[in-house]
Length: 491
Image 1 (cartoon, rainbow, N blue to C red):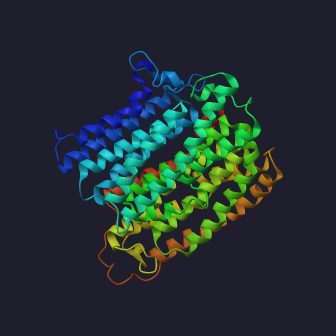
Image 2 (cartoon, one colour):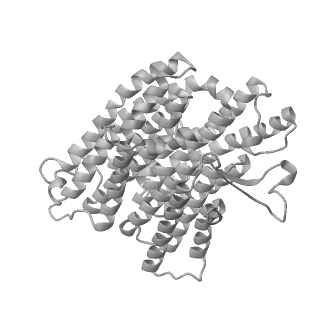
Image 3 (cartoon, helix red, strand yellow):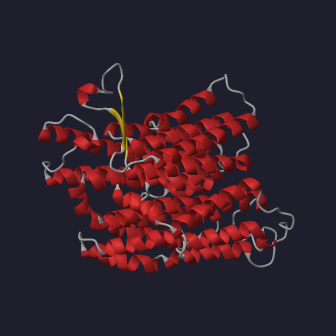
């Protein structure tokens, strides 16, 4: 069985399919392209589940690719090496699942240029999987930059008014952060060689204990800025609401469900694991930014009228929770952080899907213009209610587990009393999320049916499948969280 399991196949199979779709040899028939792509996404998800089922925490997947018998850039110790540990295994399966849901959602949301659209989806998937599995700093950066290309086209080409501007804003913000992050990676590579005599960019060969403290802090801050843009951390967040609002529904699902998690994973991989001494120094300050994310964006979300912008700002708030879990710097906090990455991905996929369905039927997402649609869309109302309840942390749903673990992780942190105090206030402050979520639910679905919406139809089979899959995942993880938690702690 192990012979059939391959990291390069997991990562580069979507890239090969992307190239195939872009070639003139592949048909332009919309139905064929859509069904073929959906079939490939389904196969990839099943393959990732197989890798998860065979995963051994004591013996993680490792793979290295040589070019004519040599490393990628042998003279600088840069290798094309991949490793899947417990955290990256979880995020790889999550990535495959979200892209599968996005491909199903694309049936009613994407109306043009299907070959290029699905090619960009596959390319973005390959880049994200490369980020989650790279065991070399420069290989990580290669995939980090590669994701900009498909993400820009997906936001700008199939979005609404202002999509091109939002796409450019996303690229500029991310590119700015990436250049500062690259500076940090170069400094880390150089000082690791100077201090330890090891010319290697592999994470396993980085030894920062011999580096001066101020050098470690400079490197950590540079790298943190790059990931802080993608997470995002306030005040580096302003690209996100525009990108989420302007992008098509399937793209918004990927942006919130997966792309933001690459920033959290980068902090985990570089700052949390590699630059741990500096992270312990910076963690209390980061925790302050985390609580700022939670509070500020909750108030901003409450003031929004567009459903997508409400969900977008709620995502920034939830990223603060993930960041706080990492700042606790203990097993509880790490478990909470990774668990919430999964829970939040499911919630945002469901909420953006609800927003997309409402827009397709009503031609607006303004909650002041939509009233009483529950009478004509009872199934959508049922799903929306349950997903909203999950998002605000009601017990028996996955986010409840991660929110409790985050507070416990912060309270048990040995780094600083600041983190403990923030942990105490973090959970009550999450009540703020119920304010804007129930406002959206009440204004959109309750009351008298607005004029012009009398003939709107309830959800289709495709939409039912997506919402049911999201809800099932939230319930399963809410009832049996140990399935995920044991893997995180054990890894």
